[in-house]
Length: 239
Length: 239
Image (cartoon, rainbow over all chains, first blue to last red):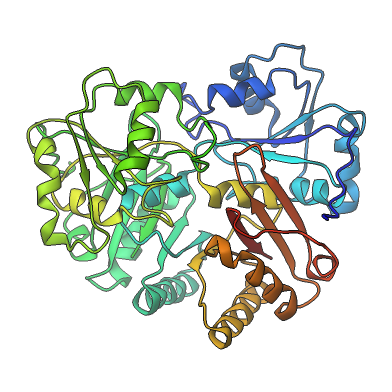
């Protein structure tokens, strides 16, 4: 006997990935999943303008009724207001600006609250730059760590990079991280300076777009490469 | 000036995710990606029988010429034989049995070798149970660690679980891991016994299938749940 309580007359919360590359028209959802979304009239989103574009690509069958913007710093007890359509039996969609909501992107507080209220969550398959870059790196994918942004301050950054290197040497664990695009070149230079020559670095640049490039090599060889990663969407992996 | 050498007359290596749930006919690839694969005649795969089924769903336009099985314990210097079609200008596909190749699944040695030979890698968007479960958990997705399988031995396992708990308490880092399906129930019981009452545990069960269930709660509340996870595909997340 199982004691899960799902409130039957509530709607579902669909977690909807969007395109990683918002400038090009890159497809991002399975046709079969799009069909699940045709009747959704209410969305909880990170940014209205970006989300209107994504929602347009979903080709909704019914008229969009409302887009609710959630705030990154909303506390749990303030979230109830977003769920009124769900309480009235309507399905809702959760969208962030690029790629997968809740992962290196906001949204997890909304999902946490939905669990508290026994609302059914349905995550949809879509592009994740973390997964795409790890698949394409050839690095260890049996255990890995995603750090998000690493420290900005030079001293803390150097210590952090050295700590990641020790996890590679100890457990072969792949380390994955990101940086604000305009600081990518600086981070690349720092990595080449700080890491041991045998450590391998993979950059996955502009994933899913026509300008996608995946470059993996030892730090020793990176020192001679002249790759410009400034202001480009970039995932860093070391192993 | 950029000094990347891609051998122009070589084919590309497509890394192709497959269905997580092989028993049901669950769609797993974007239509636009399927079109990129129509002309592929050569595949490097983990298991022939499973892959024949996946390849059938790709609806290849040309006749399949060859399926090459790679061995998990192949060493880098033995891998050249798989790439002969690519050297002859043919695109190839890399497939594992379920979900994403190279991530909690074999394949990364093949990709590592392809990088050494300057072969262009194209990862395709598809279902990843790690990403789907993390999106749907409501847990911290800004930094997380995937462990693969944790130790089997009782003593080592207990220490490992306690170490994961410290990473949560120190950095709020979500911990993600898996177990052989027939040991899932034992692991669930151990987690409830070992973890602090306030730690939250999420189980994502049978993802993408009609039997998908995502259950997140505190250890305190899990102690009273009667959920049977034996012999089911299950991702464990704690936060």
